[in-house]
Every structure is written in C-alpha cells, then in structure tokens.
Image 1 (cartoon, helix red, strand yellow):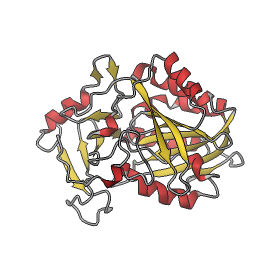
Image 2 (cartoon, rainbow, N blue to C red):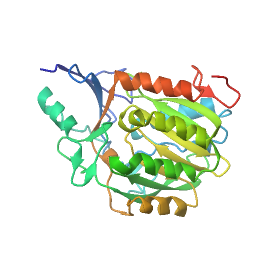
Image 3 (cartoon, rainbow, N blue to C red):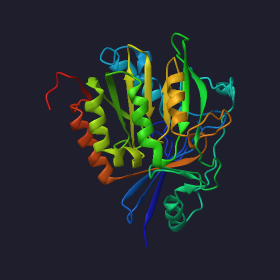
Length: 317
C-alpha cells in the first residue's frame, strides 16, 4: 500500500502563508513510496489561458540578461506572465480571480495512483511527465494552434505556435523543429527538481552545434520525455526564433516565419486546430522521480553547463 503525503501552499507568496491561496494558484506535492515519484499539482488561474513562458530571445543576449531574465522567469512561474495576451481572452488580466477547487482534494492514494497510471486518451498517448485533472477538465489530444506573446517592455508582438503531440511521435517532432533554427544555437535547461514551490531554475549554454546538441538530447530522450520537472528551450537569437519543449511536454514555437514550423508539424500528422485546449489550461499534475533528477544533472554536465547555471563553447567539460 503506497503512502501519500500532500502539502498544499501558495506558490505566489513563496511559502509565506501556508495554506492560503490569495492569487488562485495552488501547488501540491504528493510523494508515493511505491513509485518513488514526486507529483506536483498545478491549478490553472481562473480567467487565464495557457501560461506561455517568456521567449528567451526577446531578452537579447543570454549572458548580458541573466539577472533580468531570472527576475522575469520567477514572475512568470505558474502562469502569471506579464504582458501576455491570448487571442482567446484579450482581457484576461482584468478577470477577477477566485480560489480554485481541486479535483484531487478527496482522492485516496489508490485513486491518485490509478489516475497517474492512465496515459491513453482516445488515440493520444501522454508521456509520464504530466496528467490532466481527475475530472478531465481538458481531455488531451493532438493538434496545434496559433497565439501571440506580447513583450511587456516594448509591446512587441511575437507570433507563437502551441502544439501537443502523442508520445510516439513527440521527440522526433521536437528534433525536426530544432533543425529549423540553424547550425548553431543556444540552450536553456529548465528544472524544478529542487523547488519546494514549483519555482524553476534556468541553466544556460550558448553556442552549441546542433548535431552535438541532438546527440546529447537523444541520449537523454527518456528523461526529457517523461520528467515533469524538466524543460528545455532551443533558440537562435540572430533569427529570433525558438523552440520550447516544456515541462508539460508541449511544443511552443516562437518567431516569424511560422510556416516552416507548421509544415513540420503537419508532416508529423499534427494538424491546426484553433479551438484546441491544452492540458495546461486546467488543473493538471506533474510527475518526476529521483532517477530523473540525477539524469537531469548528468545532462547538465554533458552540455558543459557549470554549477552556476551557465556554459558556452569555451567551457571545458
């Protein structure tokens, strides 16, 4: 019989007021001794749509913007993205927030385990990284839609494609999208393994050849697909284009022209659907393991990113 412990707190107040949820953001950590998994539960803030991460290339050089980027990334954790306007909800910042109700509140440990074991929804297979709400507020399915990110400082609008793909085609699709960025790219590894409240740490590597990068990524394919505390962004600042493969195992493509990304998505049988809703737009859970956490730090070393979270082509590893 697995034992389950649940700790619920406000991510927005960074543990200052345990058990209170003034912004409508709730995170819970569930540790199951049977699977040795840590499960993080996120409840989408009412009135908001998909929480886009900040595209790294809008901040200019990674090196010169590390401090500013960390501040913005912390502010955007759990969906509170400054300046983001969804096409589906132009006034989402003005919507009053309320305390969300969790579909997991009254579940037994056995029910949680059973829900985490289910990965197939119709013809769509999830990875082990994330699961939808217990009451299936959003049913996972394959497709992509267009959206827009607005830079809060400059007002610049960046076109975005958000996509979900079934597990069997997901990693090869990600790999093909990365090829669109050119021969040399920058990398940002994202981890929330050590964050008690779901906050992220971003680890940088500039100027890596794409064949070298892809060799490392395929070596760690299982972890990248199935770890709900790991995300990665690949970007070309010169092109101002970027591919994010986030903790939810969604693919987010930033920057014009989007047509090359659309062609690759369709080639992999991922088709446009402007009405699609993603798992991040409702309550959902993330899952990780101690083994995945170790593999993440192995990947960090493989990519020559030092303990301070920064690396480049001159760093010896």
